[in-house]
View 1: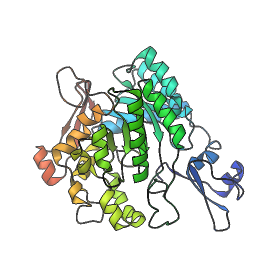
View 2: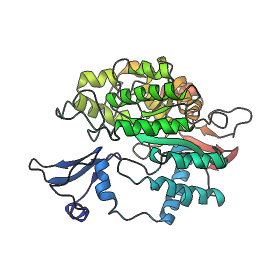
View 3: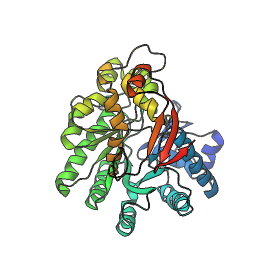
View 4: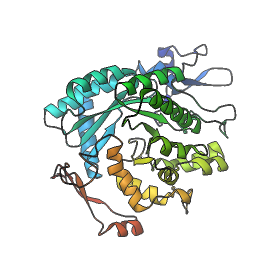
Length: 396
């Protein structure tokens, strides 16, 4: 499960009124038997059919979850995160705003924040975020920053809903899903950008990435030149020449190296060897195109552990493999560290506050068990001995 697929039993389907007569919602698929009966798998926007029947998590539970997650992040050497909220295809857009008010504002006013967070909100609510930033600015405090808005172009590889130019090798009648209709996505992006908000759009398949690059180019041309820092989240599978488009347009490629550890075998199975080898996780190609490459985790889909992500970006060796997957796309140690620190900060306009140890910044840093980065590059093993936030030891 990757946030793009839901599983419902027969009772849940009955309660939600999902039958063989139910139509697939826009941007979603109800998986069915050969005679049209729902089997319980709901892809992307189809999850909305069942989500309303799931009891809401209480405020106290959400607060406790945030505090536990923050404490765990410190053990992994993480001092700042980007939170896109409980927002995925089919989910209510209000969840992100509820968590902002019920959880983050509560923690900030109570002195409970222990890591920094940059918040993004559903693009459908861009005008609300614009009003908040106009009144409060981009920083609620040294702990909470307002990033921008997020939307989805497609689904995921694991759910066979990432949008590709060609059909899936293992599903020849399916090329994936466009989760949000083009005109709606364009209009929301145009309005968000015109209001000065940063835009981040999820795109995994090659067609989805091309669609978003073309849209970003049109929006930027219409709204005029500014430091907008458009982001594409994942940029996972790219058509020939697309990596160059990131650099030419100055698009941020926000990528998650640890996805490839589990996706390598799946990509080969779903796309075929040739397509998977030519277009998957093109980290080095994106760097060579002069795109800003920012590394992250996509936690909880994969582990929140920068050291592991850096190692994966360098080695690209999936579990059970002896050699690197697409070795020409391996990053150097220096490039991987930069991508997970100062470039990640630049990707959310926070390079003046965090991302490096420099005069005037917030003094967030980590002490590692290894004697040197050279040793880490050679041995590939290190652990977090201590994490400092704002110059104060926060872990252990």
